[in-house]
Image 1 (cartoon, rainbow, N blue to C red):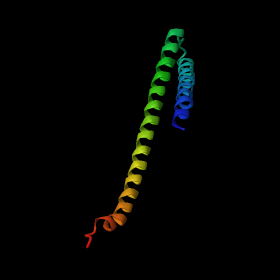
Image 2: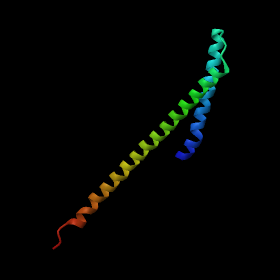
Image 3: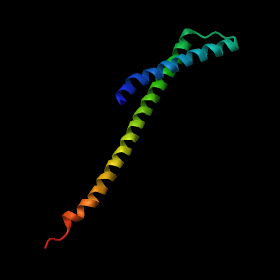
Image 4: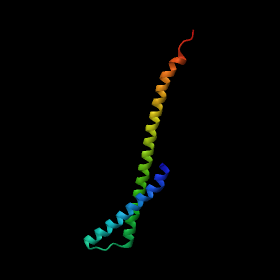
Length: 95
């Protein structure tokens, strides 16, 4: 599931950021009555896509690490509870 999110979610975040950056730059230029060069537009879109993809990757990897940590904690708590029930049977003194 995590790999699927990484393969589909990160490019989708990059696409959305690029679309937003392009429309924001063009709208801002129209509002100011200024012209935006193709190089400026491409540079801004590239930066937005790059930052968005790194941020999405980091967010997905952080979420994976936190969820694995929570699951590991639950597993260890269950193991500890089972051991507390079984240990007295195994460790009591034998006559």
